Structures are given as structure tokens and as C-alpha cells.
Amino acid sequence: MQQIDETARALPPGDLQARMLHVSRLATIGEMAAGVAHELNQPLTAIANYAQACERLLARPRADLEECRQALREITTQAVRASEIMRRLQTLARSEQTNRTSTDLDSLVKPIMGLVHGDARAHGVSCSLRLAPELPTVTVDSVQIQHVILNLVRNGIEALDSTTGPRELVIGAAPAGPGELEISVSDTGPGLDQNAAQRIFDPFFSTKENATGLGLPISNTIAKAHGGSLGYRPNTPNGAVFFVRLPHDPIPV
Image (cartoon, rainbow, N blue to C red; front, side, top):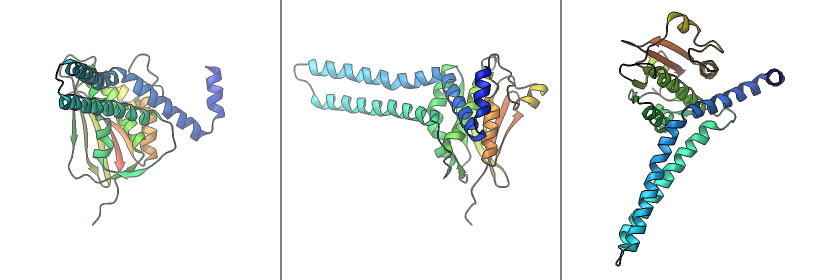
């Protein structure tokens, strides 16, 4: 531990923050391992099934080559799907300089929903996406903001592990105030008590056992670096809502 502390002190602040973000991304992806495995298993199972179908078709005395071609096309489609899942994981895990571009909320949120749904299904959680229509764009580093959303999703799913009632998670986006958009993650779990709500963004504070307590503070740092903020409020009638607010791009007159 002393060696790690000395290494951290020797790093310039920017490098230290970049490394902490990279470690946080990898930890979030690791926590989603069950969902990622489920998400990859679907196209891989389909590939195996279509390959077996091709073998059976070709074993017939008068093989229907068009059926074989269709099965091979399906194999290609599923292989591309599996490759896309791995590409998304690599994109989220890579460590790179900030790259901010103007993007709409659909393009920001929807690429990670496959991972989110896979993780939710693996934990018996119902997950839905509710984006308000015609939202303005935001200028962000998409990978960093996607990391924040995944971190909030993981927290929500873990909170639902301890509930006996409805296990629901909602990812939403809507206008939040003058010049801002809000991306929220709502759950129907137990929520936070007053003490936890006041300390939840403090480094090394966590309501979970064996947790680093760095996920939310790092997400908060990302939000602030984008000119936004990270926040919490109770859900109604029960649960928690974590949200990131970001300044949106000027709306053309």
C-alpha cells in the first residue's frame, strides 16, 4: 500500500486522475461480467445453432444450397453482433485523452443499453429507457459520460439486490433547467438514509461492503469537468434517483 501511495504522489494530477478513471472503468465492466457474459452468449449460441443446421442441411442427399446460404448469412450477422459487443467493451475500457464532441442523447445512451439490459437480466431486474423527445445536443466525451451512466446503473442494480418488492430500474433524460439536461437512473430499492445521502459523494465512503468508495466521486469529477454536476434525490414512493446534469449546446433560433 505504501508503494502505491508513493507512486500516486509522484504522478502529475492529470495523470493520476486519468489512471483512476481507467481503473474505475475496468472495475465497472468487471462488476457487469454476468451481464456481459449473457449478452455474448446469445450470438455465440446462435452461431453454433446455425453451424449445426448447415451441417445437417449439407448431409442431405439433395442439399438445399439456398438454405445453407441463409444460415451462413445468419452466422455472419451474429458474429458481427458479438464483435460489436466486444468493441463497445474495448471502447469503454480504453484509456485515452478527453475527446469531446457534440452528440445527441440517443447516440450517447443507446449504445450501452445492450450491456445495461444484459446486466439487469442477470440480476432479475426490469430495466427501461425513457428519453424525452427532441432534446438538444450536449458536447461531451461520450466514453466518460457513458462510464458515469454505467456506474449509476451498477449502483442501482446492487441496491435492488436487497429489496423484496418490485425490482425496477429506469434510465431517463429530460430538460432540467435553464441550459441543462438531466440523465437520471432511478431504482425501487431501499434508498439512502440521511447520513449516507450527505456523504455519498465523499471519497472512500460506501454503503456496500468491500467497495472502494471511489465510483461516485470519480463520476462527480467527470460531471464537474464537463461543467455539470452529479446529484441524488429520493425516488417516489421508494428508492433512489442518481442524476448527472450537463449543459446542453445552444439551441438554434
